[in-house]
Each structure stands twice: as structure tokens, then as C-alpha cells.
Image (tube, rainbow, N blue to C red; front, side, top):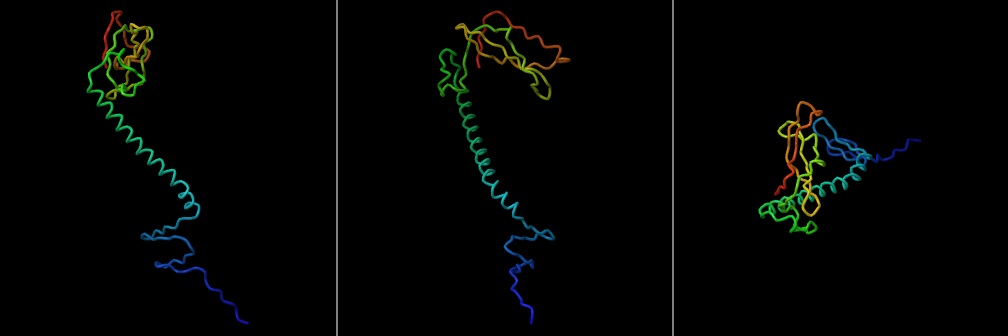
Amino acid sequence: MSPRVYPNPCRQDEIGFRVRGTVRARVGNWVFQPGRASTVATVLVLPFLLTLGFWQMDRARQKVEIQAAFAEQAQQPPASLAEVNPDDPASRYRRVIATGWYDGKHQLLLDNQVRDGQPGYHVLTPLRLTQGSAILINRGWLPLGESRRELPDVSVTAEPITVAG
């Protein structure tokens, strides 16, 4: 009795590989042959990565709109703070003028602020308005002294002051 011969389920591809439903490609001596696990992982992760890409493009569009609104409001003359409604979206990024007194007791030095490669502080001081409320004013940047134990002198005057910005 002669042995039975079964047909080979594999076929030969155009570059000489014997394949059985797998994808193979050759670049020089390197053969690309992804496995099932990596193919499944790619199929599962690809929609998430595409969603992130579209999200980034949407954020870029939103930032362009914000920059345009900021540039438009910068062209307008400053308005009195009392005239501006903070709940109105049209007032967003509007330059204002306010009058009051600096509250030196509640002043803050925002540390770890770098300018032109030099560390320093932003000076944030509340401006007490005549109505009794307060707004926080960034009075600028000061360089770091010899050490953080020696804070810069940022005294304020007790006289009324008008600020715009």
C-alpha cells in the first residue's frame, strides 16, 4: 500500500515565501511579517489615536479663535471696570481701567518664573476697589536675589492708583 499524499494548504507567494493567510513583505534582507497580536493591537488602538489627532486639530482651531478674539479686543479702547459685565462673552479679553488702592498685606510673589533664562518672581497684588471688592493685578516680574531667603522689596503706596490692562 502506498502512502496517501495530502495537498499542501500553503501557497507560494511572488517572492518565494510559503504563506498561509499571513502578510509578508520584503525590504532588502528584512522581512515584514506582523503577528496576530500586533495586528489586533493596531486595529484596537488606531481609532483611539485617530480620535486624539482630531481632538488636537479641534484644539488648534479653538486657539486660533481665542487669539483672534484677543487681538480684536486689544484694538478696543479700555473701558471702565464698572461698565464691563464679566458674564457677557463679548466682554472676554476686554481691556479695562480700574481705580483703587494696592493691598500690600495680601500681596503674592509667584516663584519659579523664568525670564530670558533668569529665575525670578511675578508680583501679584490685590487692588481694592472703591466698591469694596478687589481684583488681582500682575505688577510685573522681578529677578531672584542672592537666594530665596532674601525676598525683594515690593512695597506699595497707600495712595489711590488707576491701572489699565
